[in-house]
Length: 327
Image (cartoon, rainbow, N blue to C red; front, top):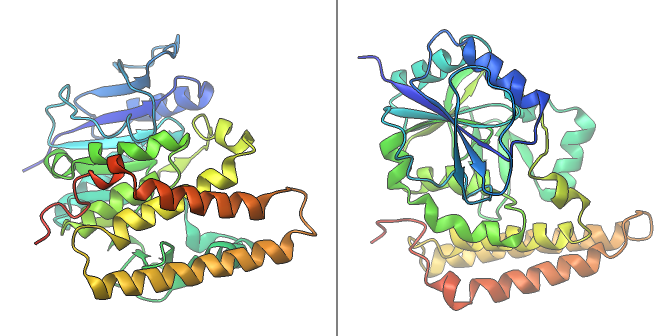
């Protein structure tokens, strides 16, 4: 039986022509959605153009807040969740739906960033600065590791592949599976000013709770990267502190104290994360005399300190477990 889908787009309404082009590609889909709803942040003006039957619903601003919704407006079986700066091939939605059905998945993410195709220089930089490496395990598209970093398949065969995490610009969720994940429990990440790592936090939650997540290589979906939400973050002198604090807090919640943890798992996670932080700190100290950006070492230390303080605060400690039904 064919399953129905609708499209949900998180937007500030400021992506301009990139958003217009996205809506035009949606209008050309071989399998049309039941509804196209743009969840626009309160206080922002909706675009003046109207391409198809897209609708606008005002919600609280935030990368998590504009996705962690109940979607009461949508009755479809599935929701294709998009950012406002992606382009779809005419059959992208059809390919995503087929991958979801054929593999019994709860969520399928498009391989939109194509890590395996990055230039060698970029791969080396990712490995040295954040311990992000390629892997040869054909069983998984992306692996989430105890230290908070991920690895990506070096030479994917194409098609659908199970995964621990996936990118957030294009994800097809079964609506009931998404609602079961209680994503509203992760709204704390928006409070940092920029929800660094939100895609991994949300997608890994499905895997950690026993759901079936996969990545579709060759979905035909591409990212134009309008940067409407990340622009202010990238311009902020506080970005490195925010990034480090978010890194600590997402690691703590999803990998260290996730509700299914025990003394042994916490010891392994703490050791792995500690080594990663020591590696990054050493790299920052060695690079400090040669880089233009001043204060990264101090910002890193401050971010770790504030992250540690935040995870021991009463609001954070009161969050429901990340692994929802852990025994």
